Amino acid sequence: MMITSPPTELNLRRFETNGGASIFQIPLQLFPTLSGYAYLVLFDDPYLGRLRVLIDTGSGFGSSNQNLEKGLQAISTQIGEPITLDKLTHILITHGHIDHFGGLSYVRSRTPAMIGVHELDLRNLTHYEERIAVVARRLNEFLTEAGVSEEQRFQMIELYKSTKSLYHSVRVDFTYEAIGMQLGPFEMLHVPGHCAGHVAIRLHNVLFSGDHVLSQTSPHQSPERLTLSTGLDHYLRSLDILQAWAGDIPLTLGGHKDPITNLPERIGEIRKLHSERLRRVLELFSVPRTIAQVSQQLFGEPEGYTALLAIEEAGAHVEYLYQRGMLGIQNLAEIEQSDHSTSIHYQQSSVPNFNSFI
Image 1 (cartoon, rainbow, N blue to C red):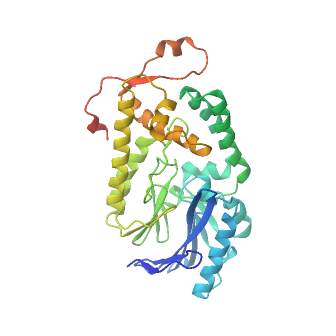
Image 2: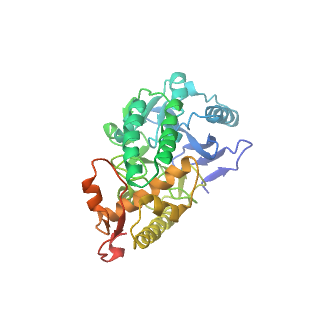
Image 3: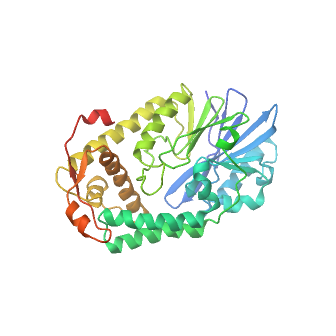
């Protein structure tokens, strides 16, 4: 079995690949209501020597950095070898969301490790402040058109911009496409959708899926109009690409939740969820509605950052249907006469065979 040791006091779990690499799953408290993992990989490569590779770094918020340090200390004790930040050889970032790379602000000055990320997420790490400013403007326009009130828009955008204080841009040493999507035994596959530069990483017979495929939850989706190479269309296509690439790989380790031992089955469950959600969204547009109204029907009235995530999730599904001509704009005349952004009311248009789009 791939799991070679039970969780320790720190819930540290150890896995072994069929190529002789040791993988340690380090639990992190990323945000008050979000937990997840970083992974340390130890492997003696015949060409690169002793590899000490950290996959993702956590958020850098609250106790996340301390959790990472404690995890490395526990690993050192377990294997009888000092494993500290200054001993790392490489840091591989699965994708450019802050709960996976925010810890770099802390780690960068404490390690000589080479940091890598996919090209399409490079600016998230190296020009973070710029990205926040640009996306905030797009987000305001999206929320306006989604029918979100001015007061709610202000609150959501302030929450989004508040993450600017959690991270400062850092230098990155290499990008994945530039190295041929491979670093020694680590192979990368670009799987855009949840994030523009998301990659899955394969090491022997183990897959690191980041947030692309998770057990027990479906990764968050947002409309591509906010960030190119995201959106539900890219995500669903990437699921197909990943399933073909990963084959019958027996163990998938995600950035959150439990390990996955049947990847095709889990991919099928996620596709089914989105298919059912798309059907529900289409049904809701039997009468004119805004994205905000559909979001309320789907997810109720969540608070805080979750409210923004709910609007984005609904928006991603509306965008998918609109792109395929299954929705039309009911208040087009009003939009044409307005010289500023206004809420858009969508409604079902002629509906061909729905199954052909899923």
